[in-house]
Image (cartoon, rainbow, N blue to C red; front, side, top):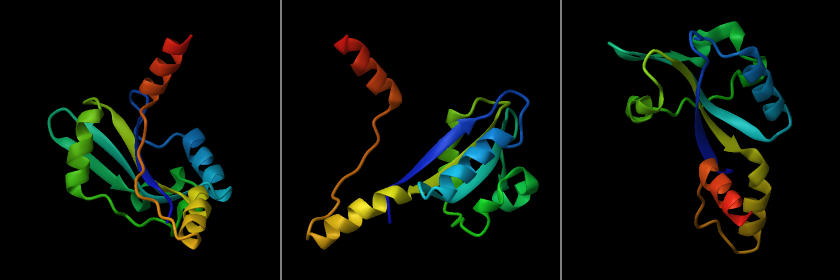
Length: 136
């Protein structure tokens, strides 16, 4: 299996459906073999009642057919509680968990060479931008 990440994409104000452009982009990424979507939820952060959650199956036609059948549905309620503060009250967000399928080849090659992946991480974009601007 390749590295697994999650994304929380806060949608434009008053938007509660996954925008077509995002769905189409996900479909292209899946078709190219870049990623495999493991979980996809649409959530709304209500100021009074907290998060309301819709699973992929409940979203229906707003999502590309390429997502069907590939979801592992691995996010738990505790995960959503931890992610909720990232979503502004009154806004909706798409929460995705995906595997970087394109990295499998490197991980397999390492294993075939008696090597192993022992760590992985994510460098926040802000840190990269800050580092690059300091170099100028």
